[in-house]
Amino acid sequence: MSEITEREKMLRGELFRAFTPDLVAARARCKYACNRFNNTDEVTRRGLIKLWRDIIDDKTPLPEPLADPAADEELFKNDPWVEAPIKVDYGFNVRLGEGVFVNFNCVFIDSCPITVGARTMFGPNVNLFAGNHPLDPALRNGTEGPESGKPITIGEDCWIGGNVIVLPGVTIGKGSTVGAGSVVTKDVPASHVVAGNPARIIRQLETTLAE
Image (spheres, rainbow, N blue to C red):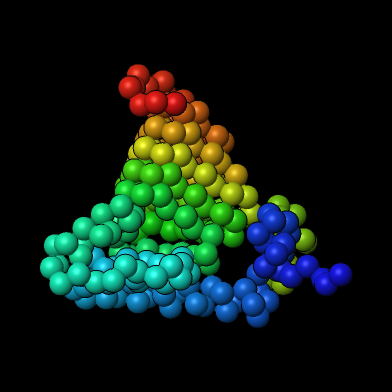
């Protein structure tokens, strides 16, 4: 049986070493893709979707272009809308649902999967940290030591306010709102408002949204 790679350990949420050639190259690929996305001038919606898919390493072919620009843009009406600049660590662990909006200056540390449900909206400067480091400094050991991570899952129809930080392993339930500047350290039930550092439940929402 072949030895488990550091990438495989990372995807399992186990301790792994990030400064191996494979993972250094993976981060570099994503960094350059982010640079292209962030530094592009005027570009069509098709062009933006292509640049975003390069970041998340999504090789799904784009639909054939249409002659009418408005009709061509309509082809991508359900794709996420991501504002530059954005910072992403690996990219291939980020999945955004239909109609998601991500405002500028957001950060995705996607050592483990980061999944965002349809129609969820982010304010500016939202930070999603699915990566983690050991607390013991002897084990942590700078770039020579291991790190780990836990998935972040944000449900459909959420609103994540500006300057929010979401920590590893957190699930935010469908339809919930996170107040600006909050640090989310534990799961948020569906259809609730949370705020603060650490984020605490403020109230339950009354909504016609189906559970």
